[in-house]
Amino acid sequence: MIEFLTDPIVVTVLLSIAGICMVLELFSPKFGVPGSIGTLALLLFFYGHFKAGYAGVETLVLFVVGIVLIFLEFFLPGAIAGTLGVTALILSLFLAGGNAVQIGISIFIALFLSILAFFIMVRIFDKKLVLFSKMVLFDSARKEDGYVSNINRTDLLGLEGTALSILRPAGTIMINGERIDVVSEGGFIGQNAKVKVIKVEGARIVVREVK
Image (cartoon, rainbow, N blue to C red; front, side, top):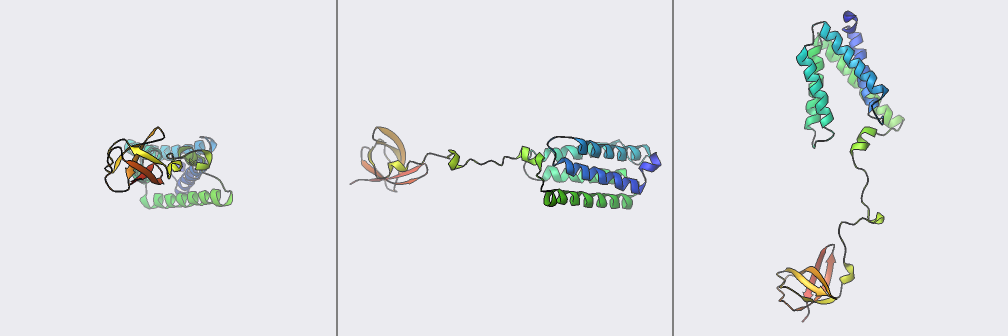
């Protein structure tokens, strides 16, 4: 059985099954049959090479570290964790293989078939990445739904009030009994001066002194 599991053709089949099943798992709402089959294929690969003496404990540790780093990539900014995870994963497969050339060919074929499976799922079957849709927020806070980043006080345009504090250029004024934070048009405005709202830019309210 060990000789069968370490055969180059069988190795290529196992890695291809693992890669394709992991791709299919990305489109599944939860860990299911494709993920289980892919995991079983990887376990058979490492079991055969471990028993044959090609893979050691350090190879298995490197493989697990690669899986963990890839998982962390979903939650960490940048692509450092994912890149290190894929590198560790491929390196563990190389270390587990008895022949670097043969294992390299097997990995290349497995990657090609996995990318092809991904392309078919997206382009032909129009599938969506369920895994990433649960981790990424696609909804937006739209103004039409009642969401605003700040209150736009366009209702104050043209109204006059009194400066409660010195505007240098920011300060506070009183309009119709309401305290409002404003900025002057650019110059200094003294306390108790009469001012007029001339511009409203979101939360920024610009006033000018009334002479």
